[in-house]
Every structure is written in C-alpha cells, then in structure tokens.
Length: 125
Image (cartoon, rainbow, N blue to C red; front, side, top):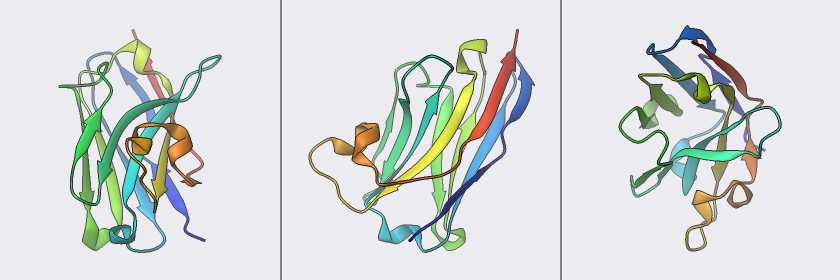
C-alpha cells in the first residue's frame, strides 16, 4: 500500500508564499494522476490542482495564476507552489494519488484511492 506524506504547511501572511511537498513511498510514475485538494472547516473537500502521468495539469479557478503543481519523478515527490496567498486559501491541504482514470475522474476527490494525512495552511490577513 502506497503512503503519501505531505509537508510544508504553516502560517503565512496574506500575499506570502508556501511550497507544499508530497512524498510517495514508491515511484510516482506508477500513478496515473496525483492531486492536491483542500478542506476548510465546515466545507467540502475541493480540488486545488492535479497532474497526470501525461503531464497534464488542471487547476481550480480560484488558484489559477497563483498556484503551480509540479513533480520530481526522481524524488517521488509532487509539489504545490502557492504564491499570493489569500485568507480564503486557509485549509488543510491533502495529497492524493490514483492508478485509475475514467474520463475526468481525476478532477474529483472520489477519483482518488490514496490520501495523505494533510498539512495545515493558515493565511492571516
């Protein structure tokens, strides 16, 4: 069973930056898609960004132009660079992976079968 471990969260002022990392216990080349999702208190888990084995990327409208997802296959790690952070970006951020893609399933939380434990990101105003 693969394990995903997130790191890099923390407290930052609005306008600041953070880089999240997601380290996998095996080669990320084996995954058809990996993604970052977030969940704020009282809200549903929502897509932030995804990357597929074909290097397609997909972003939520709310983070386009501010966040960038990338991958280092040699380190089995996926990153989320977050710039120009806003208070509404405050949430627990989760990394996820899947070996199966059906249509646009990689754009939905239920399209993933493995999740990390999450890392808290708090943006102060």
